[in-house]
Length: 477
Image 1: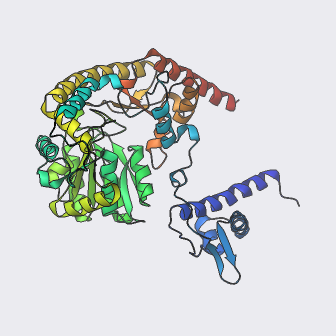
Image 2: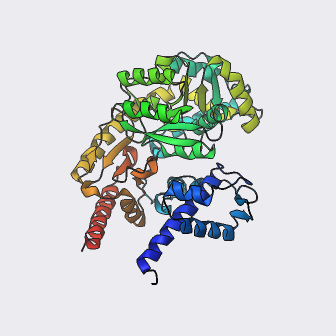
Image 3: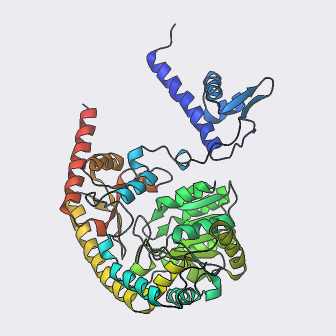
C-alpha cells in the first residue's frame, strides 16, 4: 500500500532532523574534515529514527557534498571545514528575530526606526559635548600620542583610574593586573582565547546577553544554560550542571543582569563561589553596567579576590560606543599571557580612545554625566514599567537600577510574533528567545527603558499583541 501524505511528511521531517544534526556537528567542528560520521546503526539509536530514515539523510548529505561514502568503510566528512557561520551553530531562528540580524538592523537603522529592543542609550543621553571637548584638548596637547601604538598594557593613567574605580566595588586590582582592550567584547574574546579550547563546556545564564552565546560559539565552545532567578542563578541547577557537564567556565553579569535587570544576592554569590572552588570552575564577570548603580551590588570578583574570577568591563554603555575602551582585571600570573594574545590578535588597543576616556574621568565630566543619567534612567524605568503594566505585561522583577526590563507577555503570546508584526511598523523589539540557550523565553520581551519614551513604542506593541492574538484565535477556529 502506498505511503500516506502524512507519513511522507513525517518521514521528511525525520530525515531533516538527521541532516540538521550532522550539519551542526560539522559546522561546530566537532566532526572535522576526514572524520568518520556515526554509523547508520549508531545514528538510528541516538536519534530514535528508522534505519531507512538515516540512509536517506546520508544519501542527501552525500549529494550535497557534505559527506562522502567509502565502500566498505562508511561515511566521512568531506573536504575542508566550511567557513564558520555563527547562524548555523545556534538554534534555528527566523531572520526577523535572529539576534545578530537584529543588532545589525538596529545599528543600520535610520532615526525614524524606534529601537526599544536595542542594548544602548540614545546619543542624546550620552556626553557627546564632553567627548568633543576631550578630543579638542588632546589635539592641542603636544604630549598626547596621536600617531603611535599604545603600550602593551594600555594607557597607564587610565589603568590607575580603573584600579581606583574597581576598589570602590571591593575589587582589589592594582594597575599591573589590568589590561586595556577595545571594549567589553574584545575583553571577553581575549579571555576566551586564553582559557578555552574547542569543545570546552561553558555555563551561561538562561536567559543571558545574547552576544555571550555568539562569541562562545565562535570559540567552538559547548554552551549549557542555567536558569536565572531574581537573586542569581538557580543554585540547584547550577550544581547539577557542574556535576554533569564539568564546565571550564561560567560567564555572567552580576551587578545588573542583562536581560532581566536582576541583582545577584550575597548568599547566592557566596554559595556560587564555593561550588566553583569545589568543581575547579573559572568565572568571567562582565561588569559593564557597574556605573548604572547608585549602590554597589555584590561582585564575585570582590568576594573571590580575582583568584578564579576574571572581571571585564567597558564604557560603551555609559560614555561612548564610538570611543571603545574596555579592560580585563585578572590574577597576576595570567596578565603577560593575555597581553601576548592581545598583541597577536590586535597589536594593542586604541590609545586615542583610552586618552579620551581618561580625560572625561578626571575632569569631572563623567561623574556629572552619571548623576544625570541615573536620574533619567530611574524616571524612564518607572514610566516604562507603568506603561507595560497598563498594556497587560507582567514585570519579572523590578530592577534596582540600569536600563533593562524583562517582561512577560499576556495570554501566552509569542514574543517572536510580536517582533515580526512590530518590525513592519518600524519598531525593533527584542524577543526573549534570542537570550535563551534553551529557547524557553518565548513569552518574554526585553525593553530598554531609555528607548521607550515614544508613544509609538506602546502603540506598536499593542497592535502587534492584538494581531498576534487574532492570528492565534483564527488558527484555533
